[in-house]
Length: 217
Image 1 (cartoon, one colour):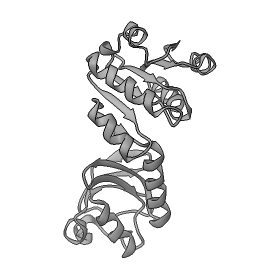
Image 2 (tube, helix red, strand yellow; image 1 turned 60 degrees about the horizontal axis):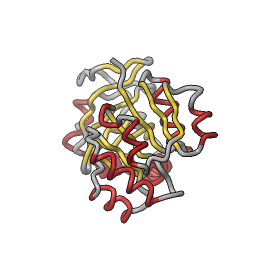
Image 3 (tube, rainbow, N blue to C red; image 1 turned 90 degrees about the vertical axis):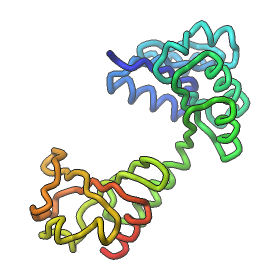
Image 4 (cartoon, rainbow, N blue to C red; image 1 turned 45 degrees about the vertical axis):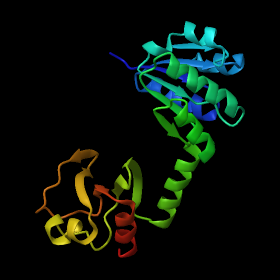
């Protein structure tokens, strides 16, 4: 069964999220007070509705508590609206509320009123771009938790032609190769098999470990 996701706020972030989730098979209900944005989203989401999400009565009619996830993607235009909307969603029993914050204070308030997860897309993108610019071998990275991330890297010159046993990445950097992307497939690593220049390594480690590995490459 497809995930039932509601997205409130159809700015650039919310619209992109709605489109991507729809393309990946989720049933998306897109909500915004701007009818033009709602009309645009209606071309690719399951349902799009023009509603003021800070109106408790109108929001309740959308049955947010029956959705798997509700994302409050209201952006810079109205911090107050995002806080009110998040608080209402929590009161309505939404099982998973993800709210967008603009700064640290906004994040703390959203957490206090009931958001299960708070994100800052601009901040997170900036960090990832900075990492990619500083460390040329990084292809992509995903934060898994406090000081733990999954990073996809191209092998450094010293890695090519060596196997994982010889490289001793856990001992030297505290980095574990969870998988290898090879010829378009993700495969389990064979510790004794030599790495190729066109392999990509999927590494679980701290951010500091990747930085150290890249500096010593």
